[in-house]
Image (cartoon, rainbow, N blue to C red; front, side, top):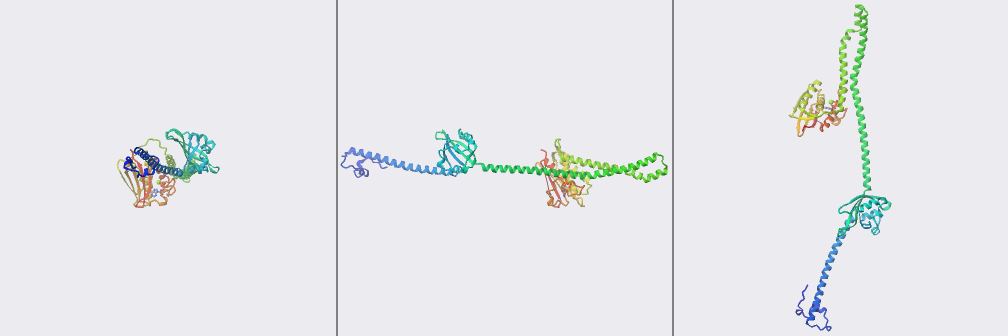
Length: 456
Ligand SMILES: Nc1ncnc2c1ncn2[C@@H]1O[C@H](COP(=O)(O)OP(=O)(O)O)[C@@H](O)[C@H]1O
Ligand SMILES: [Mg+2]
């Protein structure tokens, strides 16, 4: 602003003075002219101050408008419903999502109470939510709203207190999200899950029954053979007994030598006497086989309650290999290569069983080969041991790879295989948190890998 202090320097020609020139009204002497100039000067100051304030205000107003447009567009684009109301529940502001929900215009809604839109049975809950007060505390709950077209919509609500500039609570803000659809989807999912569980249980049950059926059939088949020859032997023994009784009766009744000799020949007494021992042996063997089968069956339940102890894997490998080759009378060459000091916390019998099963199978696989080879290796793999049993037999067909661990899967002739060996091995290994897998090796033979955790 131009400073006008010295009027003497700016005689009558000054703009402002010229504008307010009052010729002939007052006779302006030097001092009153100075006064006027001062007044005019002040007015000019006030005027420009006003101008400045006005631009300032206009700028602030523009900023405010911009902020408001921004907030409004944010509120409008929120897909959740938003209701701001006073402590009495009177609605001050809502967003378009709420208007869409209730199917009403904003003007109709403002000034009504939130309780007008909540179903009667949820009124208490609405009041509870509205009581959200303590600073920062947000209350949550579900409310059923009377939605457009007579529908009812359930919303998951969150309610926070509204504060004025002096931190005094004057109302509440509620936000809500429709959950009817979500809940329906959840219920459908839950139902599907239940159905699936039921179907699965049924399947497992069916599988159990089928498995049991196969087990019974397998056992019956296994038992059939020894039992039938025990029976046959006993019938023969009974026949022998009758001959012996006839013969002894004749002897006791004092028959003549010729008669006795004739009887001895006709009743085949010598052959009978020679046959009794092997017959009894065979019968005992049959009974032993029955007993073995029962023992094996018992093992199937695996109720090992005793404590596990560190088992020397190398010793188990050597023992099992020795027993298995002896039992099978195998010509195959069997090699063992194991790292030292491999101990597993286990029941030795179970580890033995797994190893014997694998060696047995490998020996069976190479039984028809003149150059049959079975190789066992045990290697430390961090905190576990990897046992590999590999052979140079025919290997396992791709289609059968996944089946070999199933109970009763066998490609062996009746009486030679039960199809339980690998299944039992699988169960045992699983029990020890281990893993058993199979693949064919470079020679085309099968290669079983067993991973077991080492003793800590
Ligand atoms: N080393 C192997 N080489 C080829 N086939 C094998 C081998 N080991 C197992 N199998 C296959 O897996 C099947 C199941 O084995 P297993 O469960 O031990 O039962 P089983 O020996 O009584 O048949 C065998 O019948 C055989 O077909
Ligand atoms: Mg087997």
